[in-house]
Length: 90
Image (spheres, rainbow, N blue to C red):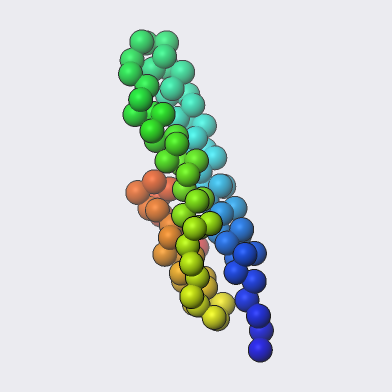
């Protein structure tokens, strides 16, 4: 029987999130600086940036019950926050 390394699977999922998150954070950094230059409120931008930083915590905190590769993969893919990160990668 093949043993599933759930910790490694979680790290792979977090890495996928980080790749997608990076350009989103970079865009928000630009928006933040522009807002500061214009004297606009930056609270919404700060909230969005923090939500992106926290998104990998969803993976860390989830309890995986699957025992096969397909089950573990499905559970980890289900965590993907499409509202925050956009569509799930293939």
